[in-house]
Structure formats: structure tokens, C-alpha cells
Image (cartoon, rainbow, N blue to C red; front, side, top):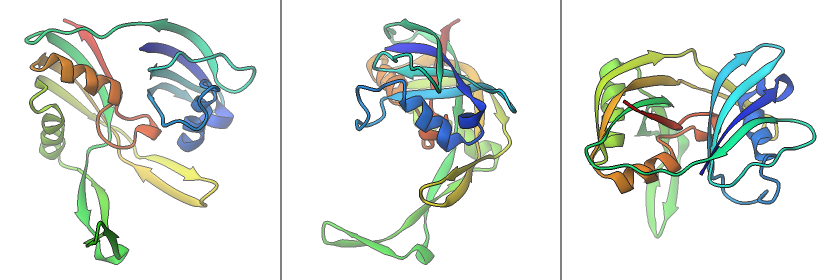
Length: 205
């Protein structure tokens, strides 16, 4: 695994969708593979750009223009059951509901009503969502939740705009299943990973 600090110029960072596409340029040998990196915008300055924390399974490569690779280091993930850790997570807590206005789809001979993701607004819903993501893997404690302003994006090729509602969680957790906990860190938590959600940062207490 690799953890990197990256600066993304404002021309890309002003649109979260384009910021994600710009980060792909740090992996030129794998342009058509599935994304195996997670990221989180740590600071965004209008007219300047975004400072990004990037976690990847492949080593990023500096490029001539676009995102600037500021620092990079390799690290391994090793934990023990019962280990207590601090954590930080920006996430997009949602629930999936059926939406008949979207029509239906057929899969393996069965017809289903299409679904949409609806943001969770109440604090208790968001905390329950987080607990469920950690279920059987870790137990959370002393969680502080900080709602953020909506994140707006535009997909230029599809001529489609949208928004997501992000929330930052900080707190303490105790590892229950160390191996699955490693997989959780590698794969990220929840939806909207393309928009900077899901990266679980941990530190030893």
C-alpha cells in the first residue's frame, strides 16, 4: 500500500468529478483498470487547488502536468484483535429505496423496481449507518460527527449534475476481526468513493 500527498490544480479541483479523473493520471500504466485508490481532500482553496491524501495499492507516478505528487511512502497494514485505534473518515451515509418513477430492470429472469440512494439526515441514522459498516469488524466508541456542506459535481460528458452530502466521523474503535479490518481499509467505506469519500485513516492511541 502507498500513502501520498498530492496537489491538484484549481482547474481540476473546482469540479469533484474532474478532480477524480485527474488523480487517475498518477497511474498511467493502468488507464483502463478498476480504481484501486481512495482519496480525501484535506484542504480546498478557491483559485489555488486541493491538497489531497491519496491511498493506493499501486505506486503513483509523477506526471509532467496536472496533479503534483508532493510526497509518497509505502506502508503495510498489520493489526491485532482487541487493538484500540483512533480513526477519521469522510463518508456519504445513505439508504437505498425503491423508486417506481425510475422504472424497472430485469436481472437473471427476475424484474425489480429500480432504486435510488437517499442521504441520511438525522444524527442517529448516520451513527447507525457507521456502526453497521463496522459490524463484526470493529466496535466504535466516542464518535464525533461533523456534517459538511453539500458537494456539487458535474459530469461534462453526460451533461449531468448532482450533489452528495458528506459527513466526517472522528473517534475511537476497537478491532474485532483484524484481517477483515485490513480489507475494509483497502476497499473503503460506503458510496461516493469517486468523490473523495470512504478513506479510513487510523492512528495508534
